Length: 426
Image (cartoon, rainbow, N blue to C red; front, side):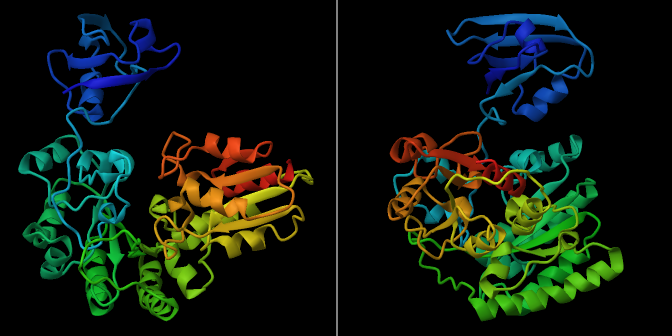
């Protein structure tokens, strides 16, 4: 168990103590922190004694006084020091089981760690929690959490998760609520499995759990060409996606009438599939699950249209995106004469995987190479890159693109406002 420092902020307490990247915090006042949650509580004291192991293996005790609210100013290579809790389930739609073989090891980690749920919004099933974990959640009031429900029918949920523990969802949510924990929920929806009447039941049961239940996101199942599981999965098409939208709209309207909040949200893919307009921003409330693809397109469009960047860019710009959002991008840039939208078919995962966030560097390179004409700037979606790094899922880097398409510049784009301003000033 250790916390390895990856970066020390300039002017911070950590710098003053001469801590450096590679140093490990083994103990705080004699206690071994298991994660940054532990570490934060232990460092809340005024009198601190750290047991440090330096990169060369030498150990040192560092004692100091600090203000109660003074932060250490160090970043860590991992938020958990005792290893990520691995998922023991075998969900019928597990995306980790659909990735290509021989990809980097971190992509094959099936985490089900309540700490990552609290810290970063990762979804957990609750099936891998121990009584000790529940006690710790209550002790530190780790709220909100993000819970993968999928179905509130216990037997069906156990079937989907392929574990008998999946049937304990009601008892586990009850325990979170007794601890005063709020939670966001999601359903990965599969045609003819947990949709229809089962979805009605799931929505109704989660609605009853308000206010502890904060939101419910419903996203369509995705299947890549690398899926090896024999369990039959059906995906949604235009008509069946429209049926889901109509079904869920009844609950959305009722919830807004009762509480002023939509509460039940559909993943953007349903609107793309059904070729429907996206709801207005107020329909998504405060976008509680935008990182889960809920309202991401609406937010991007509003950012783009709500920004008034001066300039009339004269550069030739290629805007790379997934095939699902290409039509939206073409509408947004219709008055920009030197802009070319480049929808990239996902050959790596399969062309039914059409979101920008799962594009690979290799597919982007292949798509760009097929296009003739002028090109001064290439805009790529930052969602396709590893967090904090300029690397795609297939380990191609942004620098690789820069070398191939030089002298054109390559720039990751994070939101609609940035995209408009970059184009208008290019």
